[in-house]
Length: 340
Image 1 (cartoon, rainbow, N blue to C red):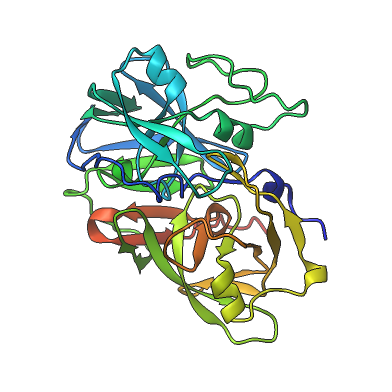
Image 2: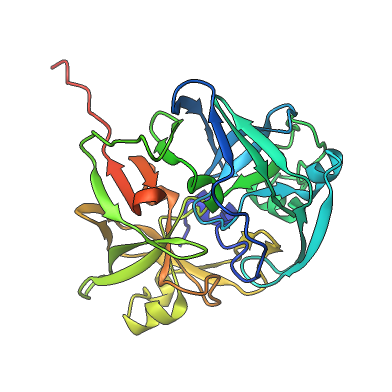
């Protein structure tokens, strides 16, 4: 069975810091909009199934950051942290999760400011990790080169240079609206934000690491079951399920309808292979996705939850992440009238 290309190069950044106790980069750092209480129409690129935003760090040229609801912290690459001369304090090794290699983690001892069009985030400590293994996953090349050649904002011929990740602390300080069809992002001040659209709101269950939503998953010949899923825009497949949950509810497709693949993540290629196949349906509050490509993990990359809800399940919507009100809103794009 041949699965879409996204399976062969997919990476999950959203579980990168689950398994290590890191110093809290607390919410409430200084944010400043250059005009009013919002920043609208920030462009993003969707490349290798990841949302890339252009972010300036301490006044640098724009760098490529992945926007990831599954990441528990905002991360800066070790290469760039050293290039900027930031003070770093080691905080231990990252172990487990996606990827075979443990990573040495740091926290900046200097406060850092970073900016996107129309907004500046100041006085923040960032988690710092080497991202060269992650680079190999998000920007693979035919000759095996990673593309990680420079520390400036310039991109190499091999692909984008992954400079960092905007994670949970970023989402916690804004209402983030992702318009997948238009490739635009809007940021709002949570206190003044009022949603007036026609989308459907979903409650988010939140812990110190992740956000969760309840959805129905259905395998052929079996009734639908409720799954508690991490909402993870860093995941390249619509649905990923943990082995114990899939086996308990008899969700695994027949072996001949699955394929084996090696996942790739923050620590490089995973040692243990996983399965990939399709289910009959994934349903979220009346929105139904038929035949979703699904990963069935043999080794669980998350400590809690039944699986992951990835960007392919959301990319047809305008999605609003409102952490201040513990909700996610899905809004279908307006259809243009036919000329017939």
